[in-house]
Image (cartoon, rainbow, N blue to C red):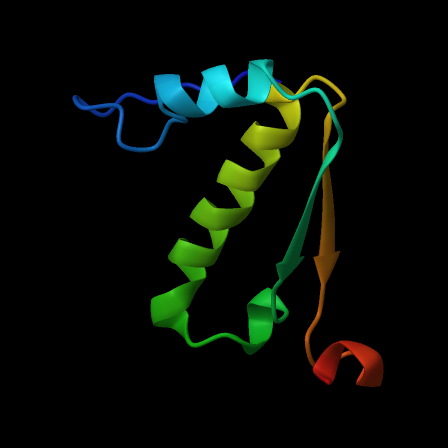
Length: 82
């Protein structure tokens, strides 16, 4: 996959410091993300949700196997709710 940020200030891209941090990982980084289903979100939050998921996917790609992303529905599992 290729992701291109066409904004002037590269607002939607991982910063150089984030890329450096990911390059220097010597252990696996587990990111647990809690997202309600897209269709259950108010319309005003859907674009932010898309951005967050896209950014997390970018971190996984930049991590070159050292970054693992687990997505959870906070309302879909009683253990996660707690």
